[in-house]
Image (cartoon, rainbow over all chains, first blue to last red; front, side, top):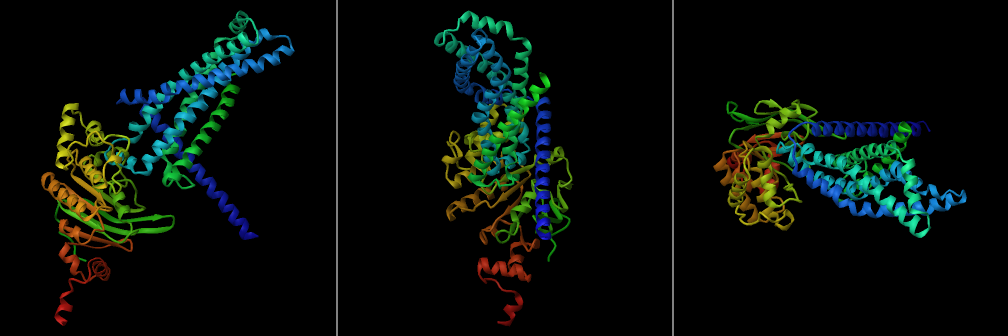
Length: 266
Length: 264
């Protein structure tokens, strides 16, 4: 019994130490990347490449998810609002929920699935095949060379993608509300115009910036520290496991921060 | 153990390097000294920690105890910037070549030139072509690493390692996985480029005895220490039981010590 307790205690200590160490590593990594983000030399071309990958190529999926989110919001909102005879509020309900919550969060989740997973896998494979060591041995800073363009691109892309998500969502809501359910189009936009304040837009913007940073941080750090993974980041299976855990961690972190930011800003 | 000439200009020196992994001692006091312009080969059985020694020299691992000096500077305690300064003189051919697999061959070889020099694109292109010519690899620039054979990948790796005329080149198992013909090709290129560039070479290999022909010194890593750093001839005649065992298992008992010869 005593031995068992000792074993349990040592396991708990082991896990705690590991996770503390890992958290420390990831935070130092973030600091180092941000420092390199702000100091020269700057390069344009890799940033444009990453903007294309993280931003431009995500537009399609953002367009679709945004449209359908707005449509389902209008559908659900209409049936709820009708019970109280206030269908006129549909426009403001759709717009506010998109701008403040669903836009940034859903766009972030889509970017995690599309670009975050790809970043973890790409960097993880580079780590596994010694490509990162090779860069270091060539006196080329891997953080500056690989991570910084991704950081810039993600932080710039997220607010723009969120904006597209919001606009497409609002029009999706309009389509369903006005053309299918018969809410007056003018009422839809008038209600929105009256109830949406700049604060709401700003909240969405700040959230999307923070989410962009969180996504790129977690996705790149997970790949970069693949060899420190507790489950063992070896081979193809190691990369796939790490990519999965990176997507899960990024999604959870985004939702937790969504709550925190809402609580602070409301 | 015969000391190698101590007044030669030392490029790489390991002093009492110890390294543990998860409670297991891999290196227990490694002493090694590499002179300028020479070729030192580190041999030893699999899993003895040959690659670990190399990683210490490259600054990818830090010793638990001991010093790793490159041009007299201890890189175990160096800052990231100092380490980068030291690494400017490095060329490395990794065991699995570590080419950037999502870049073309041209971009792979051009990367160190683009990142570390201020050369114009035309100059870089000319240098890359020259390097690929030197490695007998004309016209592969637009291909990707996965489209080349193992031997060709090694040669591209060598081209990349030599792009900036390094002072020291590290080779981790340069011929593993290649057939005899391809290995000879790598050795020929090694010989040719060293004669041309004049770099100091550190090679980790188990391609014994062929590698002896290239080397000025052979060092056997066994039981966590360098058992002896000797010229190939001395190495094959060494009295050290571990070295003798290694020579006999890898080469067969070709040479015997003078004492045994006298007894015959």
